[in-house]
Image (tube, rainbow, N blue to C red; front, side, top):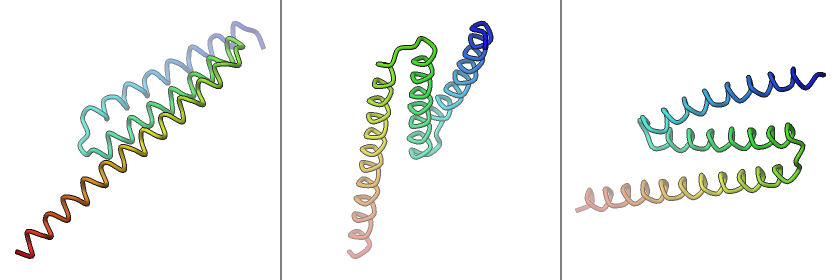
Length: 103
């Protein structure tokens, strides 16, 4: 394969990824629920990880693969922590509502 063809493929790939990231960013801003926002941010992180891996292949630098793995782990941990915070807040609301109903 010629490098010119691969360059065009990478440009097309990054253009599509950019459009998807913009759409996910719009979803993250608009909502309507908090879970929609969490999923949109997680998708943005996943797409960014894929983009870093593709850049690693294109410029033939293997250390970027390690960077993308660390980024993927941080993305996963952030989503887990946000999910636990939301679940904790929901359970607190439910418990306070139950206590008010008992009175």
